[in-house]
Length: 340
Ligand code: TXA
Ligand code: MG
Image 1 (cartoon, helix red, strand yellow):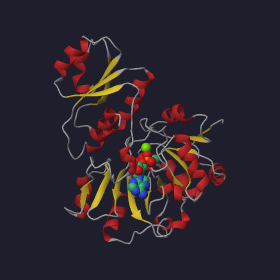
Image 2 (cartoon, helix red, strand yellow):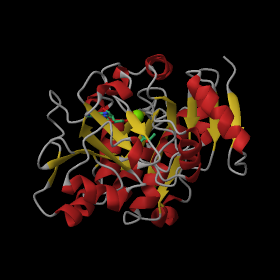
Image 3 (cartoon, helix red, strand yellow):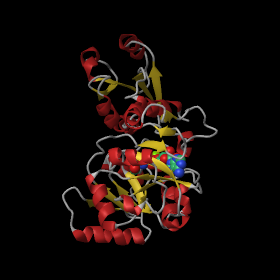
């Protein structure tokens, strides 16, 4: 299959959106930019189109997808949003990097494969400019997981999608780099207290401030028999080489690394630049320092993908102390490292 590349960064012609709408109605797969990560989208009402998403990604069919939409009136007939806490979340965080898992009201408007047969549905209103234009003009509900091959780091740049999916899907929309860089915060609103099923840039504290203490809790991540989000049990974000988290001072690690002779890299912070001047191995900078979490979130997946392109066999990264703010970053690093 030849993949069509459409650059929408400086082009908003009506014609293009009409063509995209036709493509969707023809069950085509279209990768689109969003502010979190690029998504692999298809018409959420079409069973055939949605099945193609699972196939293209190599995604297990019991791992449900998120439905993306433009305005609330599109989803209010489908899911239960009539709840004071849900309304607060919607008013505060949409459009934006938040996904809500809600009880299904009407099973007929969404393909069964989107929700992997569950009686709940995950929905998100993205705020990336291009994603919003596509959703607005096509007037469709779009099912979209991250636009990577299952198990690989999610794509935060057009090039990442191209490397994974060129010639496997119909269209890749070229947009800007994802400015957040980690997937959305997933909140399960079918339980009470609500559960953060996947941490993201909107943190538990942000949600707690809005809903009040005790009304939102973290999913117990080790409870993998009954994960709040089925996707959390699968192998994720993996590099070809091993990602190794080290709990030592940088100076000590440098001594050890100098003795190694395989191809490896160190992921660290720009504030250590002087210490790392003449190292014989690759150094990748996650951010200025540990406090710059947004910068680190945005860079992580690109760095992991660079390591693969450079055939790095071992990637070392310093262990960080977990805080509310860096929880999502550490969740992705731990998963990439555990290869589970
Ligand atoms: O930022 C994002 O959320 C990106 C962009 C493209 O929107 N999408 C994304 O999708 O990360 P995906 O498919 O890679 O992750 C969706 C997560 C998975 O962990 C999945 O198991 C969970 O959401 N999920 C989806 N529907 C669910 C449901 N009904 N119940 C529980 N978890 C659900
Ligand atoms: Mg994903």
